[in-house]
Image 1 (cartoon, rainbow, N blue to C red):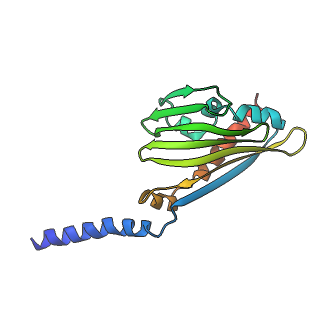
Image 2 (cartoon, rainbow, N blue to C red; image 1 turned 180 degrees about the horizontal axis):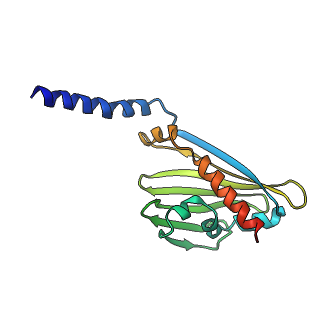
Image 3 (cartoon, helix red, strand yellow; image 1 turned 135 degrees about the vertical axis):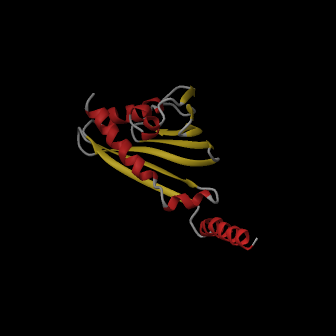
Length: 174
């Protein structure tokens, strides 16, 4: 009986430590990455404002290519919704909420599984000459407790870096 009591105490401590630590970790997150693409700004923007094109460059589509996707609305326009349901990437949707033509596209991400959460995302373009464009990809949101603890170990910026590099490759090889 004494051994069982010790095991239960140790297990309780193992479970309690991360839960207590999560109380002190920020629940808000933000990340932004950028890359320079050797293409004119309007050409780059016309490509990135279509959410269906993300399958060509973002890491999540490559992580779960069998994920089921559906869309509603007109891609590249405010109100377009892209929905996914995958074994590895969970369930969610992304909606275009604002477009400043040639400059910026804002979207709302709504994650439904493995846990519910929302985030604001954007892609912005800046001309760096006639045939060079800086693309910025950013996100901000809140992580619910205790999932906010994951922010100590995971930064979406790494995925943005990979996705932006792939975007550069796709666009510069067109």
